[in-house]
Amino acid sequence: MTPIYFDNNATTMVAPEVRDAIIPLLNDEYGNPSSMHNLGERSGRLLAEARGKVATALGCSPDEIIFTSCGTEGDNTAIHSALQSHPEKKHFITTKVEHPAVLNVANHLERSGYDVTYLGVDNLGRLDLDELRAAIRPDTALISVMYANNETGVVFPIKEIAEIAREHGVPVHTDAVQAVGKIDINLAELPVDYLVFSGHKIHAPKGVGVLFVRRTAQFRPFLLGGHQERGRRGGTENLPGIVGLGKAIELAKAGIEEENTRVRAMRDRLEKGLMDAIPDAIVNGDPENRLPNTLSIAFKYIEGEAMLLMMNQFGICASSGSACTSGSLEPSHVLRAMGIPFTFSHGSLRFSLSVYNTEEEVDTVLKELPPIIERLRAMSPFREGDEGLDWVEKHSHD
Image (cartoon, rainbow, N blue to C red; front, side, top):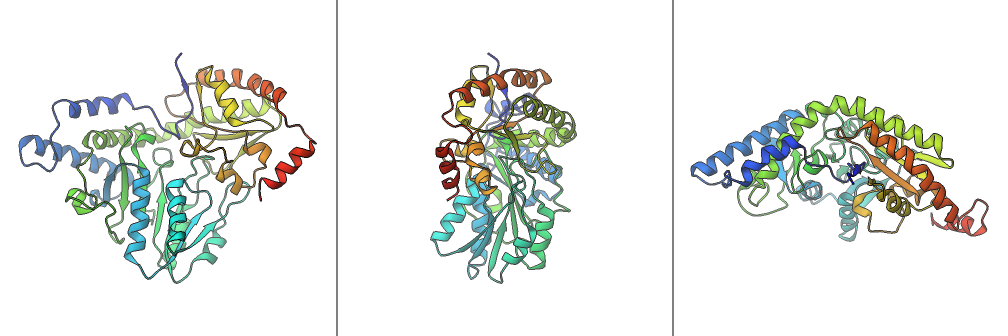
Protein backbone atom coordinates (compact mmCIF):
# COMPACT_ATOMS: atom_id res chain seq x y z
CA MET A 1 0.00 0.00 0.00
CA THR A 2 1.43 3.39 -0.99
CA PRO A 3 1.22 5.69 2.03
CA ILE A 4 -0.81 8.87 1.87
CA TYR A 5 1.62 11.05 3.75
CA PHE A 6 0.03 14.03 5.52
CA ASP A 7 2.60 14.24 8.35
CA ASN A 8 5.14 16.63 6.83
CA ASN A 9 5.44 18.77 9.98
CA ALA A 10 6.95 15.67 11.63
CA THR A 11 9.38 14.93 8.82
CA THR A 12 9.46 14.90 5.02
CA MET A 13 10.53 12.51 2.30
CA VAL A 14 13.95 13.21 0.81
CA ALA A 15 13.46 14.98 -2.52
CA PRO A 16 14.82 13.03 -5.54
CA GLU A 17 17.04 15.98 -6.48
CA VAL A 18 18.46 16.03 -2.94
CA ARG A 19 19.11 12.30 -3.02
CA ASP A 20 20.97 12.68 -6.34
CA ALA A 21 23.12 15.46 -4.86
CA ILE A 22 24.07 13.32 -1.86
CA ILE A 23 24.95 10.04 -3.57
CA PRO A 24 28.44 11.12 -4.79
CA LEU A 25 29.36 11.98 -1.21
CA LEU A 26 28.47 8.44 -0.13
CA ASN A 27 30.68 6.99 -2.86
CA ASP A 28 33.77 8.81 -4.12
CA GLU A 29 33.62 12.26 -2.46
CA TYR A 30 34.25 11.13 1.11
CA GLY A 31 36.99 13.58 2.03
CA ASN A 32 37.09 15.54 5.26
CA PRO A 33 36.52 19.25 4.46
CA SER A 34 39.39 20.11 6.81
CA SER A 35 41.95 17.91 5.03
CA MET A 36 44.67 19.44 2.81
CA HIS A 37 44.65 16.87 -0.02
CA ASN A 38 42.52 17.01 -3.16
CA LEU A 39 39.65 14.98 -1.70
CA GLY A 40 39.52 17.31 1.28
CA GLU A 41 39.69 20.43 -0.87
CA ARG A 42 36.79 19.23 -3.02
CA SER A 43 34.76 18.53 0.13
CA GLY A 44 35.64 21.98 1.42
CA ARG A 45 34.32 23.55 -1.78
CA LEU A 46 31.06 21.58 -1.50
CA LEU A 47 30.69 22.75 2.10
CA ALA A 48 31.18 26.37 1.07
CA GLU A 49 28.72 26.02 -1.82
CA ALA A 50 26.04 24.62 0.50
CA ARG A 51 26.63 27.43 3.01
CA GLY A 52 26.27 29.96 0.21
CA LYS A 53 22.97 28.42 -0.94
CA VAL A 54 21.53 28.63 2.58
CA ALA A 55 22.70 32.24 2.97
CA THR A 56 21.22 33.23 -0.41
CA ALA A 57 17.87 31.63 0.44
CA LEU A 58 17.68 33.42 3.81
CA GLY A 59 19.11 36.79 2.74
CA CYS A 60 22.16 36.76 5.00
CA SER A 61 25.93 36.35 4.79
CA PRO A 62 27.52 32.87 4.56
CA ASP A 63 29.60 33.58 7.65
CA GLU A 64 26.37 33.97 9.65
CA ILE A 65 25.44 30.33 8.97
CA ILE A 66 26.47 27.51 11.34
CA PHE A 67 25.60 23.94 10.38
CA THR A 68 24.27 21.83 13.26
CA SER A 69 22.83 18.33 13.71
CA CYS A 70 19.18 19.35 14.14
CA GLY A 71 16.76 22.05 15.25
CA THR A 72 17.07 21.08 18.90
CA GLU A 73 20.83 21.59 18.86
CA GLY A 74 20.39 24.97 17.19
CA ASP A 75 17.78 26.10 19.75
CA ASN A 76 19.92 24.95 22.68
CA THR A 77 23.02 26.63 21.22
CA ALA A 78 21.27 29.94 20.58
CA ILE A 79 19.69 30.12 24.04
CA HIS A 80 22.81 29.12 25.97
CA SER A 81 24.95 31.43 23.84
CA ALA A 82 22.77 34.46 24.53
CA LEU A 83 22.52 33.72 28.25
CA GLN A 84 26.22 32.99 28.74
CA SER A 85 27.09 36.23 26.97
CA HIS A 86 25.25 38.15 29.72
CA PRO A 87 25.55 36.07 32.92
CA GLU A 88 24.39 38.99 35.03
CA LYS A 89 20.95 38.87 33.38
CA LYS A 90 18.70 36.16 34.81
CA HIS A 91 15.36 36.68 33.03
CA PHE A 92 14.22 34.71 29.98
CA ILE A 93 11.00 35.20 27.98
CA THR A 94 9.35 32.55 25.86
CA THR A 95 5.81 31.26 25.20
CA LYS A 96 3.62 28.47 26.56
CA VAL A 97 3.34 26.89 23.10
CA GLU A 98 6.99 26.39 22.14
CA HIS A 99 8.44 23.10 20.94
CA PRO A 100 10.02 20.98 23.71
CA ALA A 101 13.43 21.96 22.28
CA VAL A 102 12.81 25.38 23.86
CA LEU A 103 10.28 24.62 26.62
CA ASN A 104 12.47 22.00 28.29
CA VAL A 105 15.45 24.38 28.18
CA ALA A 106 13.25 27.00 29.86
CA ASN A 107 12.27 24.50 32.56
CA HIS A 108 15.94 23.67 33.10
CA LEU A 109 16.79 27.36 33.38
CA GLU A 110 14.12 27.80 36.06
CA ARG A 111 15.70 24.99 38.07
CA SER A 112 19.07 26.73 37.60
CA GLY A 113 17.93 30.02 39.13
CA TYR A 114 16.57 31.91 36.11
CA ASP A 115 13.25 33.70 36.19
CA VAL A 116 11.24 32.62 33.12
CA THR A 117 8.15 34.39 31.75
CA TYR A 118 5.88 32.16 29.64
CA LEU A 119 3.68 34.30 27.38
CA GLY A 120 0.14 33.00 26.93
CA VAL A 121 -2.00 32.69 23.81
CA ASP A 122 -5.70 33.26 23.17
CA ASN A 123 -8.18 30.65 21.98
CA LEU A 124 -6.90 31.03 18.40
CA GLY A 125 -3.30 30.51 19.49
CA ARG A 126 -2.30 34.18 19.08
CA LEU A 127 0.16 36.12 21.24
CA ASP A 128 -0.64 39.45 22.91
CA LEU A 129 2.24 41.82 22.11
CA ASP A 130 1.24 44.09 25.01
CA GLU A 131 1.90 41.14 27.33
CA LEU A 132 5.35 40.86 25.76
CA ARG A 133 6.04 44.58 26.22
CA ALA A 134 5.01 44.37 29.87
CA ALA A 135 7.20 41.31 30.47
CA ILE A 136 10.51 42.85 29.31
CA ARG A 137 12.76 43.85 32.22
CA PRO A 138 16.24 45.42 32.53
CA ASP A 139 17.62 41.95 33.31
CA THR A 140 15.93 40.17 30.37
CA ALA A 141 18.67 38.22 28.61
CA LEU A 142 16.73 36.77 25.66
CA ILE A 143 13.30 36.52 24.06
CA SER A 144 12.62 33.19 22.32
CA VAL A 145 9.45 32.87 20.22
CA MET A 146 8.84 30.25 17.55
CA TYR A 147 8.14 31.53 14.00
CA ALA A 148 5.21 29.15 13.44
CA ASN A 149 3.62 26.60 15.75
CA ASN A 150 4.30 23.00 14.83
CA GLU A 151 0.85 21.74 15.89
CA THR A 152 -1.61 24.43 14.78
CA GLY A 153 0.50 26.16 12.14
CA VAL A 154 -0.23 29.57 13.72
CA VAL A 155 2.35 32.10 12.50
CA PHE A 156 3.60 34.58 15.08
CA PRO A 157 4.49 38.26 14.29
CA ILE A 158 8.23 37.72 14.60
CA LYS A 159 9.21 40.99 12.92
CA GLU A 160 7.08 43.02 15.35
CA ILE A 161 8.42 40.98 18.28
CA ALA A 162 12.01 41.59 17.19
CA GLU A 163 11.38 45.32 16.76
CA ILE A 164 9.91 45.55 20.27
CA ALA A 165 12.91 43.64 21.63
CA ARG A 166 15.37 45.97 19.86
CA GLU A 167 13.73 48.99 21.49
CA HIS A 168 14.79 47.45 24.82
CA GLY A 169 18.17 46.10 23.66
CA VAL A 170 17.12 42.47 24.14
CA PRO A 171 18.25 39.80 21.62
CA VAL A 172 15.67 37.56 19.92
CA HIS A 173 15.86 33.89 18.98
CA THR A 174 13.25 32.22 16.79
CA ASP A 175 12.72 28.52 16.14
CA ALA A 176 11.79 28.65 12.44
CA VAL A 177 11.81 24.89 11.89
CA GLN A 178 8.24 24.88 10.56
CA ALA A 179 8.44 28.21 8.73
CA VAL A 180 11.47 27.84 6.46
CA GLY A 181 10.34 26.61 3.06
CA LYS A 182 6.72 27.65 3.65
CA ILE A 183 7.15 31.37 4.35
CA ASP A 184 9.53 33.67 2.49
CA ILE A 185 12.09 34.71 5.13
CA ASN A 186 14.52 37.55 4.41
CA LEU A 187 16.95 38.06 7.27
CA ALA A 188 18.10 41.35 5.75
CA GLU A 189 14.69 42.72 6.78
CA LEU A 190 13.94 40.54 9.81
CA PRO A 191 15.82 41.88 12.87
CA VAL A 192 16.21 38.60 14.80
CA ASP A 193 19.59 37.70 16.26
CA TYR A 194 19.31 33.89 16.09
CA LEU A 195 17.19 31.71 13.76
CA VAL A 196 17.06 27.92 13.64
CA PHE A 197 15.74 25.34 11.20
CA SER A 198 16.36 21.68 10.32
CA GLY A 199 16.87 19.94 7.01
CA HIS A 200 14.43 17.07 7.39
CA LYS A 201 11.44 19.45 7.40
CA ILE A 202 12.29 20.68 3.89
CA HIS A 203 12.98 17.36 2.12
CA ALA A 204 16.64 17.02 3.14
CA PRO A 205 17.88 14.07 5.27
CA LYS A 206 17.61 13.91 9.04
CA GLY A 207 20.67 14.83 11.10
CA VAL A 208 21.45 18.29 9.74
CA GLY A 209 20.26 21.76 10.68
CA VAL A 210 21.17 25.43 10.54
CA LEU A 211 21.74 28.10 13.16
CA PHE A 212 21.83 31.67 11.87
CA VAL A 213 23.76 34.05 14.14
CA ARG A 214 23.71 37.71 13.16
CA ARG A 215 27.18 39.28 12.99
CA THR A 216 26.25 41.75 15.70
CA ALA A 217 24.94 39.04 18.07
CA GLN A 218 26.95 37.61 20.94
CA PHE A 219 27.99 33.97 20.52
CA ARG A 220 29.44 31.29 22.76
CA PRO A 221 29.98 27.75 21.36
CA PHE A 222 27.75 25.02 22.79
CA LEU A 223 29.76 22.09 21.37
CA LEU A 224 33.44 22.52 22.16
CA GLY A 225 35.94 20.70 19.98
CA GLY A 226 37.86 21.35 16.77
CA HIS A 227 38.02 24.42 14.59
CA GLN A 228 35.05 23.46 12.40
CA GLU A 229 32.45 26.12 11.60
CA ARG A 230 35.11 28.80 12.38
CA GLY A 231 35.43 27.45 15.91
CA ARG A 232 31.74 27.91 16.63
CA ARG A 233 30.67 24.22 16.52
CA GLY A 234 33.17 21.42 17.04
CA GLY A 235 32.85 18.10 15.20
CA THR A 236 33.46 16.87 11.66
CA GLU A 237 30.80 18.27 9.37
CA ASN A 238 27.99 15.99 8.15
CA LEU A 239 28.84 16.81 4.55
CA PRO A 240 26.25 14.56 2.83
CA GLY A 241 23.55 16.08 5.00
CA ILE A 242 24.85 19.62 4.48
CA VAL A 243 25.05 19.25 0.70
CA GLY A 244 21.54 17.75 0.75
CA LEU A 245 20.28 20.65 2.84
CA GLY A 246 21.84 23.13 0.41
CA LYS A 247 19.95 21.53 -2.47
CA ALA A 248 16.75 21.24 -0.43
CA ILE A 249 16.64 24.91 0.50
CA GLU A 250 17.12 25.86 -3.15
CA LEU A 251 14.09 23.70 -4.01
CA ALA A 252 12.12 25.04 -1.05
CA LYS A 253 12.80 28.65 -2.02
CA ALA A 254 11.65 27.95 -5.58
CA GLY A 255 8.56 26.10 -4.28
CA ILE A 256 7.23 28.70 -1.82
CA GLU A 257 4.69 30.01 -4.34
CA GLU A 258 3.38 26.46 -4.89
CA GLU A 259 3.20 25.96 -1.09
CA ASN A 260 1.05 29.09 -0.84
CA THR A 261 -1.21 28.31 -3.81
CA ARG A 262 -1.65 24.62 -4.70
CA VAL A 263 -0.77 23.19 -1.27
CA ARG A 264 -2.85 25.82 0.52
CA ALA A 265 -5.82 25.05 -1.75
CA MET A 266 -5.56 21.31 -1.01
CA ARG A 267 -5.38 22.04 2.74
CA ASP A 268 -8.42 24.30 2.53
CA ARG A 269 -10.41 21.70 0.54
CA LEU A 270 -9.53 19.03 3.10
CA GLU A 271 -10.61 21.33 5.93
CA LYS A 272 -13.92 22.29 4.33
CA GLY A 273 -14.72 18.73 3.36
CA LEU A 274 -14.14 17.39 6.88
CA MET A 275 -16.00 20.27 8.57
CA ASP A 276 -18.98 19.81 6.22
CA ALA A 277 -19.12 16.03 6.70
CA ILE A 278 -18.44 15.66 10.43
CA PRO A 279 -20.49 17.37 13.17
CA ASP A 280 -18.95 18.50 16.48
CA ALA A 281 -15.60 19.41 14.93
CA ILE A 282 -13.50 22.55 15.31
CA VAL A 283 -10.39 23.87 13.56
CA ASN A 284 -7.60 24.72 16.01
CA GLY A 285 -5.65 27.92 15.40
CA ASP A 286 -5.86 31.30 13.72
CA PRO A 287 -7.51 30.91 10.29
CA GLU A 288 -5.93 34.18 9.10
CA ASN A 289 -2.32 33.49 10.08
CA ARG A 290 -1.49 29.85 9.52
CA LEU A 291 1.13 27.91 7.62
CA PRO A 292 -0.33 27.06 4.20
CA ASN A 293 0.18 23.32 4.68
CA THR A 294 -1.15 22.75 8.20
CA LEU A 295 -4.63 21.75 9.42
CA SER A 296 -5.22 21.00 13.11
CA ILE A 297 -8.78 19.78 13.55
CA ALA A 298 -10.50 18.39 16.66
CA PHE A 299 -13.41 15.92 16.82
CA LYS A 300 -15.46 15.81 20.01
CA TYR A 301 -15.81 12.71 22.22
CA ILE A 302 -13.09 10.50 20.65
CA GLU A 303 -9.34 9.87 20.93
CA GLY A 304 -6.83 11.05 18.34
CA GLU A 305 -4.73 7.89 18.72
CA ALA A 306 -7.72 5.67 17.83
CA MET A 307 -8.34 7.72 14.70
CA LEU A 308 -4.67 7.44 13.70
CA LEU A 309 -4.71 3.64 14.07
CA MET A 310 -7.85 3.29 11.96
CA MET A 311 -6.60 5.71 9.30
CA ASN A 312 -3.35 3.76 9.15
CA GLN A 313 -5.35 0.77 7.84
CA PHE A 314 -5.99 2.86 4.72
CA GLY A 315 -2.36 4.02 4.52
CA ILE A 316 -3.21 7.52 5.75
CA CYS A 317 -0.37 9.05 7.81
CA ALA A 318 -1.17 12.03 10.04
CA SER A 319 -0.49 12.98 13.65
CA SER A 320 -2.45 13.63 16.83
CA GLY A 321 -0.20 16.62 17.55
CA SER A 322 3.55 17.10 17.73
CA ALA A 323 5.53 14.01 16.76
CA CYS A 324 8.04 14.98 19.45
CA THR A 325 5.39 14.48 22.19
CA SER A 326 3.50 11.56 20.64
CA GLY A 327 4.72 9.18 23.36
CA SER A 328 2.81 11.16 25.98
CA LEU A 329 -0.84 10.50 26.85
CA GLU A 330 -1.18 14.05 28.18
CA PRO A 331 -3.29 16.46 26.10
CA SER A 332 -1.26 18.76 23.86
CA HIS A 333 0.31 21.62 25.85
CA VAL A 334 -0.41 23.86 22.86
CA LEU A 335 -4.16 23.12 22.84
CA ARG A 336 -4.31 23.37 26.63
CA ALA A 337 -2.68 26.81 26.45
CA MET A 338 -5.37 27.81 23.93
CA GLY A 339 -8.11 26.64 26.31
CA ILE A 340 -9.43 23.98 23.93
CA PRO A 341 -11.86 21.81 25.96
CA PHE A 342 -10.72 18.33 27.00
CA THR A 343 -13.42 16.67 24.90
CA PHE A 344 -11.98 18.28 21.76
CA SER A 345 -8.24 18.38 22.54
CA HIS A 346 -8.04 14.61 23.01
CA GLY A 347 -9.63 14.12 19.59
CA SER A 348 -7.29 16.38 17.62
CA LEU A 349 -5.55 15.45 14.39
CA ARG A 350 -2.83 17.34 12.54
CA PHE A 351 -2.68 17.06 8.77
CA SER A 352 0.46 18.63 7.28
CA LEU A 353 0.75 18.57 3.49
CA SER A 354 3.63 19.10 1.08
CA VAL A 355 4.20 19.77 -2.62
CA TYR A 356 4.29 15.99 -3.14
CA ASN A 357 0.64 15.50 -2.10
CA THR A 358 -2.18 15.20 -4.62
CA GLU A 359 -5.89 15.98 -4.92
CA GLU A 360 -6.59 12.23 -5.10
CA GLU A 361 -5.01 11.78 -1.67
CA VAL A 362 -7.26 14.50 -0.25
CA ASP A 363 -10.25 12.66 -1.78
CA THR A 364 -9.21 9.46 0.00
CA VAL A 365 -9.09 11.16 3.40
CA LEU A 366 -12.48 12.81 2.78
CA LYS A 367 -13.91 9.39 1.90
CA GLU A 368 -12.38 7.30 4.71
CA LEU A 369 -12.25 9.57 7.76
CA PRO A 370 -15.97 10.44 8.31
CA PRO A 371 -17.03 6.76 8.76
CA ILE A 372 -14.05 6.23 11.09
CA ILE A 373 -15.26 9.11 13.28
CA GLU A 374 -18.80 7.71 13.23
CA ARG A 375 -17.63 4.25 14.34
CA LEU A 376 -15.45 5.61 17.13
CA ARG A 377 -18.21 7.87 18.44
CA ALA A 378 -20.56 4.90 18.53
CA MET A 379 -18.05 3.15 20.87
CA SER A 380 -17.12 6.27 22.90
CA PRO A 381 -17.99 6.22 26.62
CA PHE A 382 -18.50 9.98 26.46
CA ARG A 383 -21.83 11.55 25.58
CA GLU A 384 -23.11 15.08 25.75
CA GLY A 385 -24.60 15.77 29.20
CA ASP A 386 -22.68 12.98 30.96
CA GLU A 387 -21.96 14.03 34.55
CA GLY A 388 -18.63 12.22 34.42
CA LEU A 389 -17.68 14.13 31.32
CA ASP A 390 -18.49 17.43 33.00
CA TRP A 391 -16.13 16.48 35.84
CA VAL A 392 -13.33 15.54 33.42
CA GLU A 393 -13.83 18.79 31.50
CA LYS A 394 -13.59 20.87 34.65
CA HIS A 395 -10.54 19.15 36.07
CA SER A 396 -8.60 18.83 32.79
CA HIS A 397 -7.58 22.50 33.16
CA ASP A 398 -6.70 22.38 36.86
